[in-house]
Image (tube, rainbow, N blue to C red; front, side):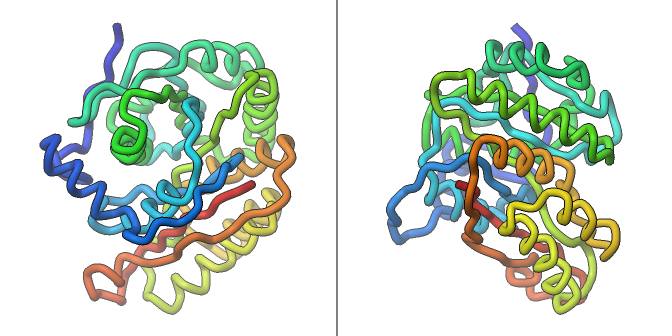
Length: 270
């Protein structure tokens, strides 16, 4: 069985099981809210020390189904532009997270854009950092489909998003769609907050076309805009009617350096 080893353990998150559990627990809000089902979400993916408290708002707030499709960007440039893993598992210090082969195969039947490819995922951190949250909350009681998207073409987002929506409709049970994305990168705090809000507003408006336009026209360096756009297309097809911002912060809020920050937001789509 194919098992993808962790690529960023000990760097983006703690490398030992006990310390990682403590780190994830520290990222979750201490006040318990009533959990809500979701269709899609945007969740950040920096090192847990920076964005984990923002991601934790989503994982604490949402009813997480046992089957998930997780979309991430391709930071490394390696592999296929729409790379899927269709079998096996991903390993973290908390154990193996099993790939949902039936769901992956169904997606590949709906669109030829998705190709089985381990290279795109091998060194990519943005999906991997979501798994410790899921493992802490669900243990081994979930499966997921990893999809790494790297082609900046709106028509590709439409095709993959529509395929996801069709497969979710046919699944016969809830399937959550998570888009892993940080927001604006390496500008000062005021600029980043302004640019972040431009992207956040379009996610909240459930408007994938305007999100796409804003990214390019306003030079918003949102690394996961392709996954976020794809998620929104799928969520709208699945009947989403609202979205809510759970938390917005920057790296400067953690390290005190507001000269060059990265923005993070968690948004739930219902």
